Length: 308
Image 1 (cartoon, rainbow, N blue to C red):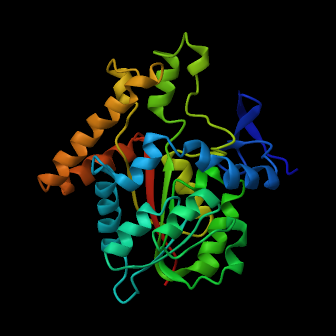
Image 2 (cartoon, rainbow, N blue to C red):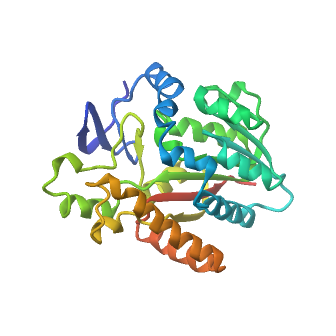
């Protein structure tokens, strides 16, 4: 087991999460074994979440929320992608295939890889070009290089994220193409604020964003930016999603009272739909870029490229 220097650590359930000086971000240490993780994601993860509203709604999207998110992603990708590159996307960790279905409908050539047999069967049922395999098998799958590679809520789950980014840069992404990463923004200022105020007397909810073994890695805007640069990428755009942590600070404590979480989500949906339907995407982009600059927003959206 490799040594990792750290100045802080938090014990969550039976796992220790460290502020790793070597890696530059918080992560579980030691990591679960490869076999433990493979069994978990192939046999447990999606089956356990199969009836969860958030997961199943990604395909049905009754609120139109994910359609707006994907429209935003595509709009940014098209703006950043050099002219002349093919409209091809590889979605690593494609889940139920909702993003690939969206991109396919927009005329893109789509490919995906998904380790969960449960999620893969749903992709297969929707006639998507997705292979069921572990991310460690990527080089054996003979995917062609693509102009866009996406990691939507994937990097936080991997025991060796640096190795995946290396494979993408060297084998899967066309030079000058776009790598898009969407990860939770954890250990943010607002989370620290909640820890030290609203949740100070509630030890069971302290560090509520830690979810090992599902989430093995935890990034802030700055640590993700530094990590990508270290891996040889150039960041061309960095933004956030809405900072959900504002709700409990305004009296809507979905952390201590999960039953109010759905209503908080719908409030965010209302804002997103209003900005989208009134053609205020530029204002939204500017606002969320400012969130990113001060390190808040529930998720980090990074767009990076390699040298031409």
